[in-house]
Structures are given as C-alpha cells and as structure tokens.
Length: 334
Ligand SMILES: Cc1ncc(COP(=O)(O)O)c(C=O)c1O
Image (cartoon, rainbow, N blue to C red; front, side, top):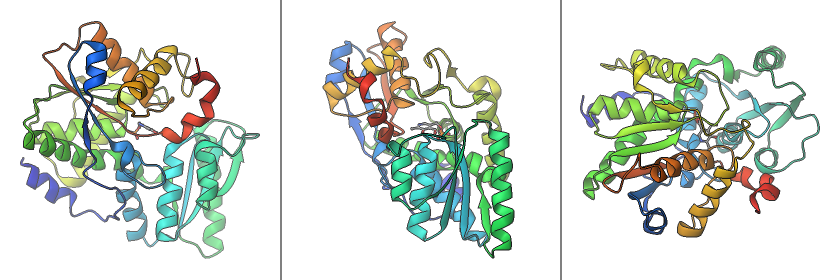
C-alpha cells in the first residue's frame, strides 16, 4: 500500500491533536565520532510536547479521541507508580477537561517526584495500591467505574479498552511514515532503527512493512511487560483488523533484544548510565534511566561489537521518559 493510503486509513479514526510533529531528526556527529562508528541520528520523539514529551503524546491522540467519541467524561487508569503513560493520560485529560483517576500500583509510601509529581500538578485523583498485581488493579478500577456510573459519570476504563493497548501502534505507523519522509527528502540512507520494544515498536514495524521501507527494526526490552513479542504481533493484528490493512507482523518479524534489562524494570544498569552520560556529553540529548537509556546501551553495544558498522546509518527513536531521570539522581552520578 502507499503512504497516502495508510494515512487515509488512519485518518478515519476519532482523534485529538496533542503531539508537535514532525519531531526533529537530529544528526549526532560527536556521538558517532566517539564510537568510531556509523552515522547516527536521533528521532526526537522526546520533544512531542504534552507535559515533558515522549512517545505517548502520539498514542494519546487516539486514546482520548476514542474516549471522547464514546461520550466519556472520566478516564480511569492503572499503571506502575513511575509510569510515563499515566503522566500522559493526566496531561491529555487536563487538556480536554476530562476527570482523571490514577490507580497507582506499588505506591504506599512513594513521595511526589518524577511522573507522580507531574500527575499531581496535572490534577489527577490518586488511589494507591500496595501490590503491583495488574489483575487486582484492573478489578479495583472496575469497582471505581461502577461507583462513578452511579454518580452520573461516563467512565473510560483504560485496561478494558482494546484500543488502549494498540493506540501506540497506530501512532507509530504514522511516525514511520513521518520518518520516511524526513530521510527521503534529505537522502539519508537509513539501514537500521533502534527503539524500546512495545506498542510503538509494533507501529514502526507495521508502518514500515506496509509501505515497504527498507530498514531493519530492533526493539530493546526494558522489563516492563511480559511476552512483548506476542504483544507486538497481537497489536499489529488488531490494527490490521481495525483498518482493514493488507498485512500484519508475523512472530518472526519482531526482533527484540532481552539482554539489556539488567536486574529489572526501573533499575538502571551500569551500561544504561554510561549510555545516558555519553549521549548527554556528546550531543546534549538527555535519555531516561528506565527505557531509552537501556535501549541506547543496546545500540552502543551493537556498534562496539561490530554488528552495526560504519557502512550503516542508524536512527535511534527517543521515546522520552525523562521526568524519571531526577528520581535516579544518586545512581546517575558515578
Ligand atoms: C519512555 C518509554 N519508551 C518506550 C516505552 C515502550 O512502550 P510503548 O511503545 O508501548 O509505549 C515506554 C512504555 O511505557 C516508555 O515509557
């Protein structure tokens, strides 16, 4: 299919407008020189706007569009207490005047800092669950929704809405087209793309496959979800069904690296800290310790091991997450 046809298919969905796009595609000559390696560019999706920016500004356009099309006036969401996603929902709800309830997992005694602080500023109402268990939190959200309905609200329960799981895939199909236009207009011969594995990666993969873009996409797992490869396939199939697309992603097409998560989600590895420092000191671009620092560490490792060579041109998609940087100040000063 053509890029115009894919744009047209996406164009029929209910949508709000949040992200500043196209985001810049920034050359990183000093980073490239420091590595003696390939030409490196960073797609600055950390600059999308919407309360510090990041990939989810693109996702939220479809999620809030869907909630508004369904006549909802309240958004009930649960995530891990450090969640970027939760921050974006708070921001997007503030923009349209929708009441926002956040059920924070694992937060009994967490201080208001990073994303939690931003959610507070953005007007979220908080419920704290000591447990990290998703099913328990989902059940809790449904109970809140029941009560809200009795109080006259029309709640949108995030975890029960299929679109909430693949909105990122819709947003990043469009990002793939945007990136293609940028590199084609500047004749940049991109061979490889790196980003954090998840719904956005599914969108880059699917958008690229549908319109025949020539690059190889690698995702890096940050430890925040199970079965990420299956999810990528499933998100792409749901998008295929929704938009009647000619194909979706096959299981063998999702290339995800699992070796860079370290001790676990939200625990920065030494390599992640080194990657954050190197990119900051060569390009003045700030990565985050939970997601993009780990993805960059993987890309640097592949360059240093010669799996990405100086014949390659590689684009790293910076998906944001920077508000959590300040929560890790102690481990980042080494
Ligand atoms: C900064 C950042 N990058 C990447 C991801 C990966 O997930 P997705 O692509 O589904 O947003 C997340 C998930 O929360 C994230 O916060």
